[in-house]
Amino acid sequence: MQDIIEQPSERDEEIYAAWASGKTLRTCAREMGISPLEVEYAIDRCLPPFSSASQLRAYKRDLQRLDDVGAHYYTKAMAGDCDSAHIFARVQERRSAISGWSSVNIRLDPYGAQTKQQPSRYDKITAAIERIAHRHNGNGAVLAPPTVPDPETPENPDRPVGGTRMPDGSL
Image (cartoon, rainbow, N blue to C red; front, side):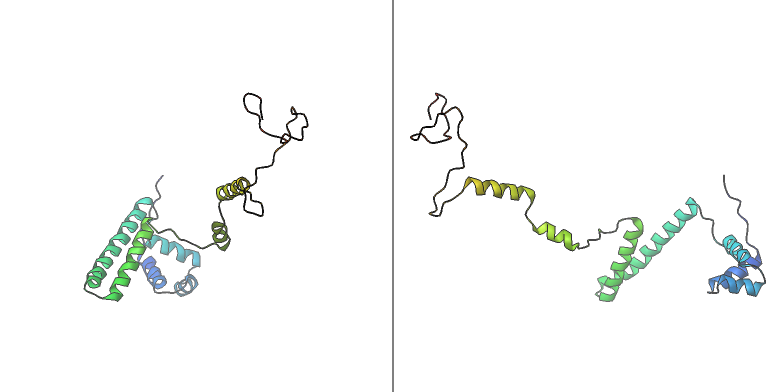
């Protein structure tokens, strides 16, 4: 369903001009002798309709204006004017922002930064395995990993406890 668009009257135009000059709704209403709600309706009749088509036109108009301003300052910037280069960069940032091409905002999270400096879980596990695999006694000699007694081997003081059996059954 399409809204019915009322054409603004001359009085609506006067109210709109007063409002556009910076007067508040209450001031306009007092000067015109009408309610603030009637002032709002008059202003709405003077403004373009709010629809997809009007929004698209406004968007395209804004992009064109930014392109025109950007072209002017780009020419001056290429001639060596640093202030114009700064203005051109700001215009391009604004154009990109309204087009949805804004840059990613990087914010420093102190907790996240501290977490990033710590070793990863993989590095911690790898370090723990290497510590176990390379145990040293006080003389720098590598110690064997701890063993568990073999329940099938009878206690024999000449044999190492918990020794590994070979496929033929020998230690």
